[in-house]
Image 1 (cartoon, rainbow, N blue to C red):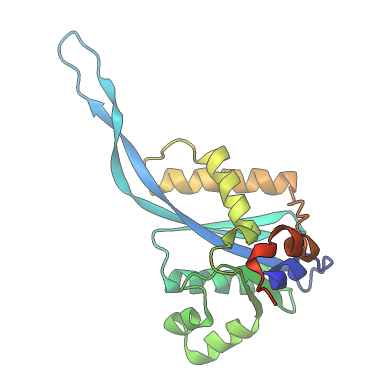
Image 2 (cartoon, rainbow, N blue to C red):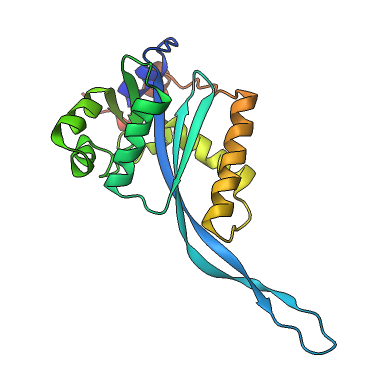
Length: 204
C-alpha cells in the first residue's frame, strides 16, 4: 500500500507519467417491446432482454487530468496486452517510462504480453512500464477505479442496447471529461495510512 501512496506523491513529469489502469464489465440490455393489438398501441415492457456484455478499460493519468477509455467485448489477458501496447506506443509514445498502477487481477502481468506478442516485442513493452500493484482487497487505491465509478454514474446509469451505442456513450463521456480537465484531488498519504489503517500493519 505504501508503495502506491508514495507513487502518488511524485511530482508531475510528462516523461514519467503516472498512469492508472482498471477495467469493468457492463451488461448490454435491450428493451422488450410488447406488440400492440388492434386499437391498442405497442408497449415497452419493464423487463430487459440481455444482449451480451461490454468491457471498459480505463486509462487515467490523474496529475494531467487525462483519461482514455477502450471498450472491448472481453477482458482476457490478450485484451490487456493490447491495451498496454496502445498505452505505450499511442497514448504515451513520448514517455521515457510509464509508471503503471493497477490491481492484482491475474491478467495484469507481463505474462499477458507474452501470450499475444513475440518474445522480443513482449519484452520491449514490459520494459516500457514501471509496475506498481495495489494490495489484495485494496483496489480502491487505483485511481482509475474512481473514474470508472464516475463514468458509471454519469453515462451508464441507464441500460444500453448494443455495443455501438455503448462505445459512443463512453466516447462522448471521455471527450467531455478530458475537455473539462478534471483531476483527482488525492490526499491520502503514507502517514495517514499508518494512523487510519493501523490495524492492517503487523504488531511488532
